[in-house]
Length: 78
Image (cartoon, rainbow, N blue to C red; front, side, top):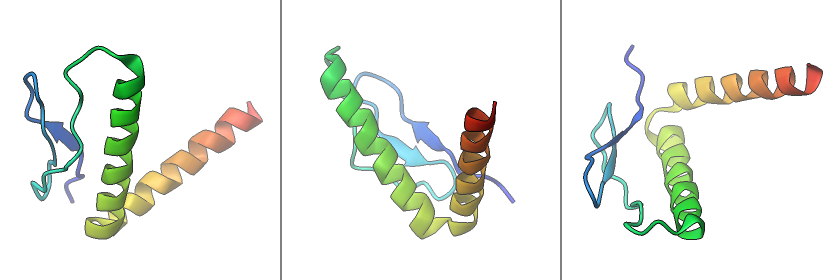
C-alpha cells in the first residue's frame, strides 16, 4: 500500500498537496524570509496535513502516531 506524503509544486509561491490523492492544501509558505511568519506557516501546513491524514488516510495517520510515540519513548528513556 503506497504511503501518502506532503508534496510541493515548487517555485516562489509553492502550493502543497497529498502525493496519494492529490488533494491541494490551503496553507502556503510566505515569500519573505521572516522567521516568525515562516514558522507560523509551517505550523498551519502541518496542522492541515495532520487533519487530512486523519480524515482521508486513517491507516497512515495511525501508523504515524505509533511512530511518534516510539520516538518520544526513546527520547525520554535514553
